[in-house]
Image (cartoon, rainbow, N blue to C red):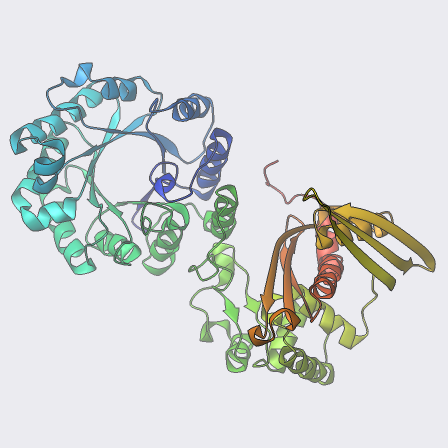
Length: 535
């Protein structure tokens, strides 16, 4: 039977210390439930009553039900010169509903001298008395040894004395923190091995690392290999400076690579969904190159790679993408061969013979030469395949469109778009205003065809990017427009290229809507929310 390693998520506390990170109470509750659905064991919610938002969060969480996770409250050891039962912060921890209290304390002489200005002996007393107070009232106490690895390098005996004081006072876990993120794996392995040998039979040893030296994940893994059985981290590696250890990478590394038992069977497949949901709630653009869950984690572009994956995915994939809830992507470009085209056609349910695949390849090369970038526009590529097979019916036939932008003397700007199109033999003329040309065109087009294609209402544009392809030509240069759209289940890209930026935008806009209407996506929209999806 595989040995258990426990996951401790600190996204709601440590992750929020990253630049630009902020979540409302409701959003934090959604994150907590997403982590619980993934199978995370401990969710650190923050400092109870440190501010009105945290106080409100703990009040809400007290009434929530979780299947897998327990909530931890975070705080510091008692203040210098204050008795633990009368320390305000300690009282707040004691009074909160959370069954686990995680205390952070000083371990490194540099901090004792420069920050807290506490003698080493009193620091040990502060640790012991704080842990003992919470343990005596029935709290499960975890002790986070701040800057442990710096302290261990400076004075191993004192670093261990601090841990021993916590364990003697009733801490069930001592977590070794690489707070500055500067320690390398060999040093983490050595120190962790020593701690496990000294205290591992009396308390669980944990690891908490940061990524300032790019070793956050590696340091967490080597600590587990040396006997640590709890790993702290954040979703997508959020956190101060360079971030915390990325729990989204650590979890599959532990479970799929090292064979530890972390989350219940089947829940690991929620990993990608969870990572993307938390990115969305935090208003963070997903890291497309993130291991396991990034859009490029299982993306193949070179013809040889695609051919290899088509024969046996193990040739260029280290795991089955489905294990972490990810999708395989075949990127199309001028480097692609027929195998890439065939693989994409198979994914979208199109039967493609070798001759048509060859025509698609040649068409791709032609478009890429003109400035198209189909790798980033899978929706446009899906349409291209169907056009070459003859299995393509446009949503409408264009007669004309026009955009008028008027800037008034008072600075107010108005944009108006008029389109004239034919749908099923009937002519439609629609005019709409918008906050820009693309918005006005989108509004007019949807007004014209919305009744014929009602589930266009479920398609939203979520990103708009413009790039000048030849900067030397200035305002006369060819422009590339990329749009991203979503139906709530899937996200796809479309592209337009023209010397006229509005023409390029119109082309990308039409492709984005037509790609959203392709059978596979349209069926998902009709089917409604996936089973088990939260409302």
